Length: 517
Image 1 (cartoon, one colour):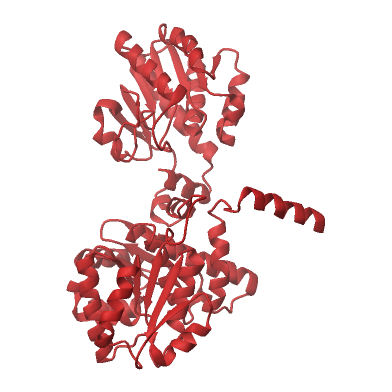
Image 2 (cartoon, one colour; image 1 turned 90 degrees about the vertical axis):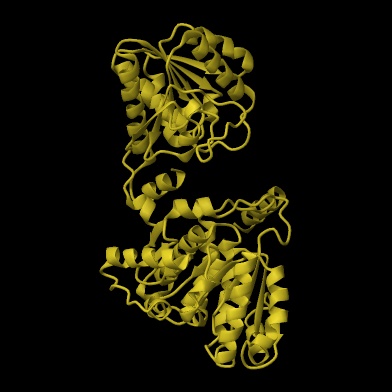
């Protein structure tokens, strides 16, 4: 839901618009459950769930209900502009009683309201709650449940009963036992797993278009990218092994490795033939290069490679390998080991060609990244043309199921599917149709696999890769190279992350900036 909401905002559907529809829908359900002209208490938290409650209170008052709104916390701490705006509207409505509850002792006021109401609207906590519910929120939930038990009055929860995990149905310390839950956009899995808390579940449409879930968007990126602890240390953000390169191709594995580093992993090792190891190393002092004797990766390197595999969180196989017999044999042995160990892997370029006759080596934690030509080599089937997107997606889903892996099919619109979930990426441009951009994408997938599931990692990697290309074209014009993408990847990540500088560092930076101005 969080992902779909942010993606909907990117598509032009405002949060205020969605909140208005959500609140009105809650008011509709209250009308159905308790009839007209009754007394209703709306208990609200400080987030958007509370904002939905403010809107519901306004509609109920307009319909003739005697409405009281109890806000848990200080109004100045209301977290979003949309919720603040709707709270301000309530201040102008003298027909609605407003009560602010800041301390546990203030709950006696709420108890008095609950003892005389015909219905309670629970708009305290929504789907964003994490960890155990504590303090005034826990006490308030406990109070509402006890009054419900004592007076047998209906409780209408907004989106999810407060204190219930929308994903798992776990009770996070204390949870409201709702008579009915009005949930938005689509039913949450946790509601189905905890019927004793969710009660009847009513799903309402708040105007989120299907594209908000189908297209990869900023919501997907923000949800997928980790929020690092101030105490993060080397190794926590992931280690990637890139197996690639040959006497013919030295740039591909370097681009993959540099992309993974640009995405934020701690360490990347490139295992590459010794004839090109120095060239790969010359791309950046940040690369750790393991030279494998000879011109190509071969079975004699397997002991060394397995040792490196065991030290990595994710393996990327394919960039610049070629498909000579030694390479094919080595990749086959590596894939057997990776499948057996269950390690996450991304397979690109020549690695895909090796798997043409060995579909049995693919597995759930593998991401394969073909363009249309490589897809034909892998499957023996021609993809429908890009302008037949629906048919193209159907073929992709069918093959992802057959192969038992995640496919990221590169094209004007990238298709990502594991056979169950389908995502389409629409970022990127025709200037990216140059050598090396696929190698950069492979590095991004490898990095995100350190932190996420295969289908989400592949989808968000395609989204970030395309955005980097779009930024590059906007600033450089329509002639870019793969190395240009590397410069823009950190800028794309910054769009979705809170700056991680220390508080003292921030103060010093701001001081120096003032001095310069």
